[in-house]
Length: 250
View (cartoon, one colour):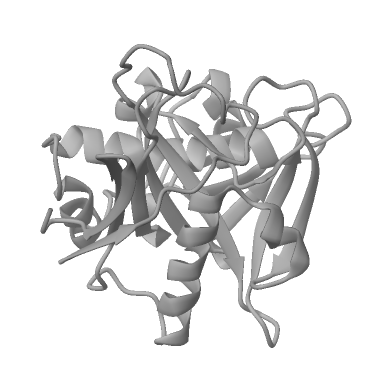
């Protein structure tokens, strides 16, 4: 199954960077948190600082590249088997350890950028974690990927100054176990954080690819509770056009 879309001009400040030498995409993860306690689902978005290099001043979801710690940090529960199966689909092939790292990266980035941490209390004393994971230790938690769902995958087109092979995850707001105060402020990477309804005006300014992912999320939510059995779209750039495949069939 394949769908080809006309290539659209990039709306971020790197749109002119289409002449860079080939760069291998870097694995990255994005987390879209959903609040479904009201009549309409809301998603958590942040506004990036005007002086950051990548997408300054843009409305974004928390996310970033996979870190070496993501494959080693202890977690409260293994990633669900169906989630791992979805992450292992597609090319290039990755090991289960990389699938785990991708899921854990989404949790770490969300905690680093928003102060919202997806974790779970452990039996007995939790291992002491440092660096980006210290908020979990402070709260007596370990990262918990059990509530994550894979919504989409997308690879930045060639010729860009930065390229990412991004897996877009979602999780319900009820999976937030700890909040770190003071993470979002005027001098931080994210200067504002807000829950907005799906389809609302602030989301119209998102990067085109992120809007495609949100459309997929809306479709999934309209079909009932999230599950791991739904088809996962995979966007990639080939022969001057965006191609949308179903992950695992490309």
